[in-house]
Every structure is written in C-alpha cells, then in structure tokens.
Length: 143
Image (tube, rainbow, N blue to C red; front, side):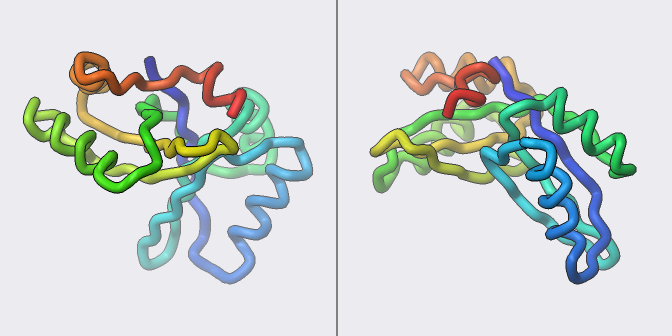
C-alpha cells in the first residue's frame, strides 16, 4: 500500500519554486504535500499530488527533470507522542527510514506522514500489526 511521490530537480535560484508551482496550478495539479531539500546549485521538491499522471505529463512537457518514487503515507492521531510511537515501531523492527515529511488534511485530529523507507512492504506490515495503516493512492487523492 504505497503512494507515488514526484521528486523534481529545481535550480537553486530566486523565483524557480514560484515558476514550478505556477506550472502545477495552471494545470489543475493540487499539492497534497511538499518537502523541499537543497544542495548548493539545485533543490529537490518532493511532492504528493492529487493526480500523478497529470502532474507527470505537465512536468515533462514543461521540461522539468523528475522521478516518481513509491513511498508510504501513514495516517496517525494529531497528538503528542504519535510520531514517536511510529518511529519506535519502525526502529524496533529494524526498518530504516531514509526521510519523511508531514502534512495535514481537513480531517480534524489527524496528521499524515510521508515515509521513505528501504522496504515499503516490511514497513507497512510492521505498522499494520500495531494498528497503524498506511493509506493508498486513492485515499490520498480524496484528502
């Protein structure tokens, strides 16, 4: 049960993120989550969107360099300790976390984490056993 994340390489210059988000908005691509990491000359925008196919087509047509990666999206209570619990569960089962970022929705009391792990299947199974269920692409698109 994974979702698709698009990682887009952007020049690390003023205005480039605005151009990128303009391209998405002008083509009705709605961002669900965004993480921006930087290096000296470029940045990587990791995005979760409402329509991966449309976003990929739009980005390709606009000349962006990007990749699509399967990641886990996990729903959890929006309360102190919830993230710590998820991290403890994964760590106790030797699931290595490469990176993560959070987003919220209109669903009160709920938070979401995007998790990039070495083994999506193992992470999903470990979390499910503890009552934490990853959400699928269709569920994510409805948020």
